[in-house]
Image (cartoon, rainbow, N blue to C red; front, side, top):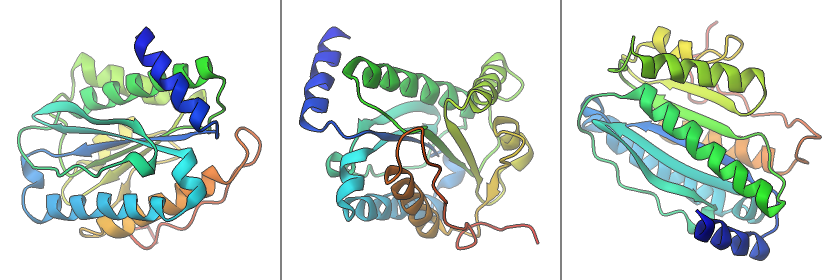
Length: 229
């Protein structure tokens, strides 16, 4: 951990800009096989391209990627868009969603400690979960812990949690993770490119603000979400 902190310290010397961290929790279980996983791959690629096109976003936004498909894997620790190489996802296994959420929260807390140790300001982090399934660790201590973590963090404004339901995902269970005032959104078809374009615009809007001072206006979700009338 000491070596890691020393490396991160050098990273912040080279780039002292405030950071806007975002954890992507991506369902890569077997039900995503075929068109859904292909659309997800394309969407993450477009996210990287759009963020890299913005000079300030390249310096301030940080992405981490955690997949949950049979197992939970940190496939990308936090990096700025300039260093982000979009992974190629393959679909397989079950849906340990609760464990993925816990892993994402732990990864984010570790990153925040690094910011604090380096004296770097940061914006309110985002955790962005996308799933097409039913959590296979539902009604377990793991799921209960995940729900407690997201609810407590939202109440304390420690991070913003978004849930996106794809195809036949159980939106009711997903909503247990989401704050009552921010229920999970339903993706229109396989509009992953539109979804990640919205995420890019939103993160760029956040990164233009002053940490802890101004609250940016996010773009509307109607390009990708099935909004209620």
